[in-house]
Picture 1 (cartoon, one colour):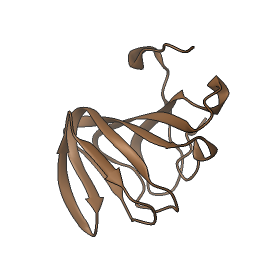
Picture 2: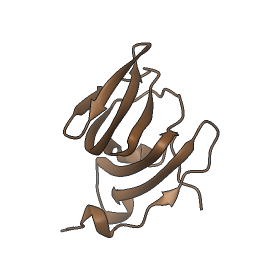
Picture 3: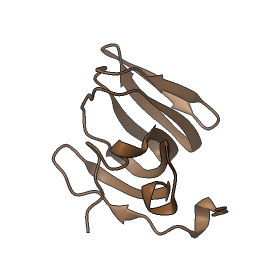
Picture 4: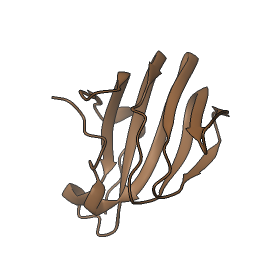
Length: 121
């Protein structure tokens, strides 16, 4: 069994092309014995963004706090605390924060727990 509080996990800066002001932590994943899914937390500082990218698997996103936009289907759409987003496989996407920053959880297959989005050291 694992019980972990979102505020007790240390996030690490992401170091990859196309990223600005993003930190990430794996909340629960392969290292914890999760057989199917990995849950990641992202914190995007005001004016920051994740890389614009796509991959061959879906993922589900829950916005924990703040607001911003998500690029999906070629359009930027507003997102805010409490929103759930389904990112289909092979769909180009990107998250950008608003003035207050953006914090979200992202569920991906455990075999892709870092996948295309890897935290820096």
